Length: 617
Ligand code: G6P
Image 1 (tube, protein in one colour):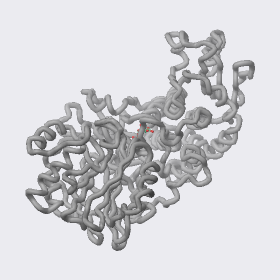
Image 2 (cartoon, protein in one colour):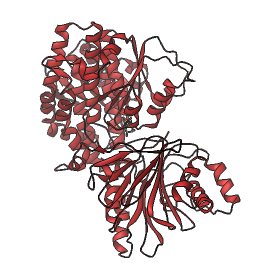
Image 3 (cartoon, protein in one colour):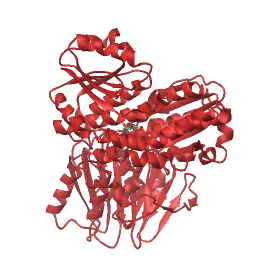
Image 4 (cartoon, protein in one colour):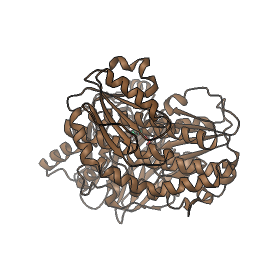
């Protein structure tokens, strides 16, 4: 959600911090702020509402604003409107500065307590209680790291936070509980951020804080304590992604770049999982085959686009290999008493691996007190190898999408689908429910998928033209049948996220049970029509739309005979094996949303009110 960057160096750190914030801006972006301790040992800050560029402009106007230690933040408002007063860093007595991601649940009680001690609050945020509490503890204890340890003991909720104080201007302290933090190691300078992407321009060596860790970072040292207060050493990890991966390159937007990366990243997700035309069961981990053979049910839990990937997977798991599968959004699942069938695999899907609800669902499912525990094990399909979800799951199947910066997920979704299909094949093989011939066919089709996607991407101009029909529209209806229904859901989500057009999705067969009442000349109806058993049924549904003057936008297999006519727009999609069609048919819907958003002039990569990684509830 929000982003944190901190640096301590022998040089002025403001430019470093601003660049870090820019790289984190996709996470949350209604205001930003930066604090330093200057060479007169004074705390100074600049905060601005709006984008990081506003903050950068303000900094340029004040050349005296320099320091060798600083912390910075980009905010996505939870408590308190996105105003300058509510923007981080927050100060206490102009001595302590603090930035925070997460939500402090007991902030009201703490606020009352701190007011009784004489602290004056200047914001509506939950964060401000932490900085005053830290100031209070510091005045009692004297050492910043020890004061932070005492402070976090009194916090309930989620936090990733960083702080500094004028009394000890040679260090930044940090704490992690429920919100990720990573330390970047330099030479004679060290860094801290909520996401390693923020630091990729300055280092490739990272230490990930674990849950409950406290850190003290100086120019040439890092000290860490675990949640029991023991000093610990954590592994230094060398980053695998290149610094350029987080740049737009020749593309106008990250979203477009990420759409075009799909053939490559799908290939990368397949690589290593197959040998020839067969699935490589060993590549799923040393004990995976044994686990896969035992699975009798699957519970999928995820949020947003990842949830849609789970919905597609249900069709595959049940139809191809007969494993019953349930799919639920994590925010519901985590608070529900569920009845778990014996031998159920808990499968979470997440691009970031840090989504608060998905993580909580995993933790609840395996907590000792959870009434319906007894899962066979947990498997995470995730794009971030160092995430909490990966670390806390028994098994991981990594998607190789690389950093996804556009808030609207594209390549993460199609690589999740690829991973889910590979998983289905692996489970079928381990359980001997998938014929060898079917395995070979599916793997061959998967290998052809990247070039099929390239063909669809080549229709970009046609889809760009189609987008013009949406400029004046306020609503849109997406229809799909079978495994294309979740594709329609994903299409509707993309359109509403980035163009702000209200879009709904329905299984085409449900049309006459309500949504048909909405259909008239102003209601564009978008659908995907691969050449499968359901296509004739779908065609009848489309007739129902045309009969009410609804304008049709159909992405159809070359062999499906739907004729272009007035108010019936057809874009041909290359033929593909039906099982893989949800992956291919997602691509034109992504392009359509992108071009509609461009025409509407919205902020494609950072749509209003949204954040890339939802680390609060
Ligand atoms: C946010 C993002 C979506 C994403 C969802 C789940 O809403 O904007 O793109 O699908 O979170 O995120 P995850 O990282 O768990 O896949």
